Picture 1 (tube, rainbow, N blue to C red):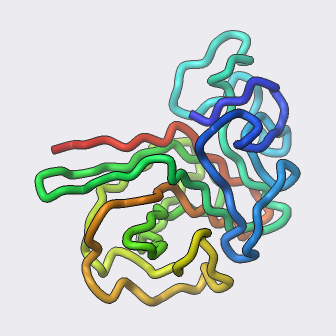
Picture 2 (tube, rainbow, N blue to C red):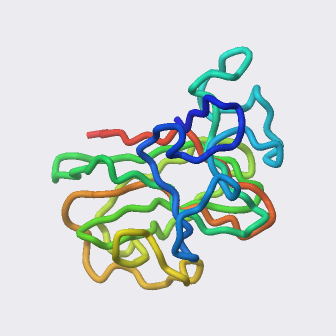
Length: 199
């Protein structure tokens, strides 16, 4: 959950979350004026739709209220992720990522870091109406686009990536989350990100 105690539009850090956001194509940290957690009137959402995929309090003003929303006006490419915990997809484990999403025309991709390399899923996820998306983790190289290396998930050409991983992925997932491409003038909102071991 991307909770917001203020009822406004604030940064992840100000809410004590161990998630980060980063301008993937611009190579710098955003501020609350560009995106964050909250109920921004521009999203067309109200206090009764302040969470996606979770029961709401009435009125909807609790710590669990809010979703992560990018600003469409800037036509931004944003990475939303956490590196606070590592995931070990051992041979006997199957990991599944799930989240709720709403974006009129824009999409998300799964974002991970393995062995110091950032990857984006080849698969894109669209949600013109709010709904849950799921992605089962695979080490198959053909399913991952190479975003880059380094501390932050940066690539000035993130929208035009075509190079897939040179070999199957191996090792722990040291960061994970979503890449949100808001190339239109709309909004892109996500909430309730979950990692599940399904085997």
